[in-house]
Length: 242
Image (cartoon, rainbow, N blue to C red):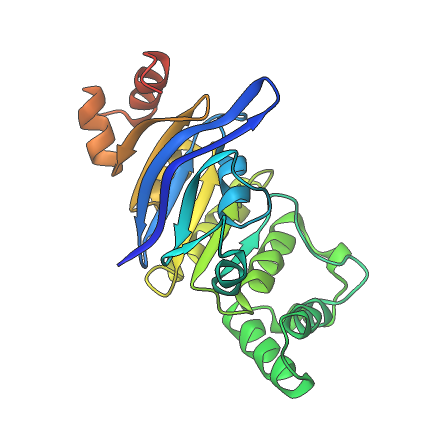
């Protein structure tokens, strides 16, 4: 089943085209990566798919619901873990989760039960009473991801999930993302080549708002005529195939 489909999705800001006629499909349960350098159009694509900004032209569909004409139904099925860690610094880990659950319409009892489930699943029980501002950057990203999952979305958008993290924290977050595979559709943006290669079932390489290449890491390397993923990225984006 197709979870996400974009059809000539385009976003322009005055003279600049951030996303240019992007057409792709993402299967249900897939981890799909938008890979590219800063300014490639990745975050703008996420913002359109999550109904945070309207396309200039084209459309996108989440399980058949248009982000242009059926925004309310799209929002019911998705959640976003933004690039900026979205936690309330003065609240505890538990309070952040309970507040998020209540914002999604859960009653107090359900919110508490769901919070305890998430705390256990994310190995956060021993930090539950700690204020979010005292957590490390990696732990704050982990909490931000947990908050995005508390609504049990069918589609999860992860915008640069490991940016700014050290190697150990990045690897730990990779394991957490991998553990979610199959339980929901995950669309992540990243400019880390090794992250896309390690996590994504398939990916699109973006350059200048356009799709430079689409497929598995193996297919992209084959298309570029190299066994080195970094070299494949450079060849496909530098040769103007975007």
